[in-house]
Length: 595
Image (cartoon, rainbow, N blue to C red; front, side, top):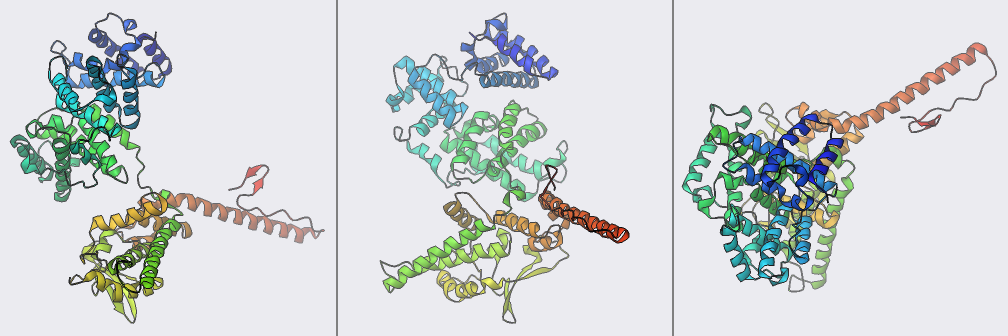
């Protein structure tokens, strides 16, 4: 059987970091004490699955006097060693003492949900084996007895409510038809605000702390606060809203009582992982949304608790590991959006096809009736088509589309329309009073049709002057504009696109055809400084600039060669020789490709 000594020896042979090896050897002495053995050779692979929790209980026991930093270091080193053992196939993370049926459920939870859910299933399976329950036999009475078991001394769980909810949530996700618990159906909801809990409904201690956090972040000067933690009022307001959503999730969905929610519960790694997985399930298009929450949690653990409350957080290493899992989330790199104009155009064409189909149905029906399409639906399709096509020609920000009003931003001059934005609506700085762009001539027929006939249908009795209106006659908000692009891009291409993605697509497409013309791009994107445009898009432009320079170098080489050949012919006045083939980019020369 595989022993821990064999794993350590294998790791030492493959590892090149001497400092890590020394830290692991120091940790192993405490691990032997935790497992009650004298040598690591006595720790066999059948104990590997629970060895991390055994080490945790040993480190926090009264007899072990280690600093919090040392405890985190030992847990981290053991986690690295166990991760190496799993990668080598020395053991599985499933408890060997549970039945094959529960073992299959635990493996499914580890694969589909998270290893934390796998631990909850294993704990549940171990209790079910004592009661003679199989995965399909678990009912409400069984879960009530399981919760009582966790609360007892035999359960040995520090936070029984969290362990209970984690197990039940995992079972509900794996077997949604067998566990019709209405409270847990909220996990599939797309309404992120439904579970938000305002901070004035928290317990008194947390209310004082959250007020102190706002003051600590936004005060002009706060002794002991790092400079990077100084926040604007709007940033702090967004962070408090994030905490309200998270605490609401812990209370209303995860089931933790208000009185038990403190900073330890907020930063507890299992709670954080559960919430991040929940955000993945509520149709968030990318990991940037989750990353904002993780950055907030790290800031609270590393900066606010030690500096603002004079407390230490024991979960810093675990939070760093969770955060590192999201570091590899693909960010919005501009070079990833090159040559994607056709995708955006396909979205607009698909909206046009659906709008034409709706109009044909109404024309065939003769009038708007039960067999026809509502006039507001067709008018809304006109609005969406104009919005998407205008985003292709003029890559404005979402806020510019929302605030675009007739007679204020869309002005008619000499029979042509001009788009004008004042200083307050753009980011070009206080020295530029306004910017003007001619309205694309290709979209003028669509604009006139929408403004003269379709927009009044959407406007109804309201008096809003915004160009883009909802079916209720109100201006589109940020969420509605985002939803238009997300829904239609998913229908057409199966992936998400936003207005900011289209800005990247337009910018990279322009630079590909006009390398180095950052000044024009700055004006179109309404950047305040040219350095911003260069910083964002220079990496993409380097590749194409190199390609153009290669073409220039080859052309110069050809010209010099031809001049040299012509000069020799004139001097020697000899018979003409076969001309040397002119090199071109991507030609092979002596077996090598010329760039």
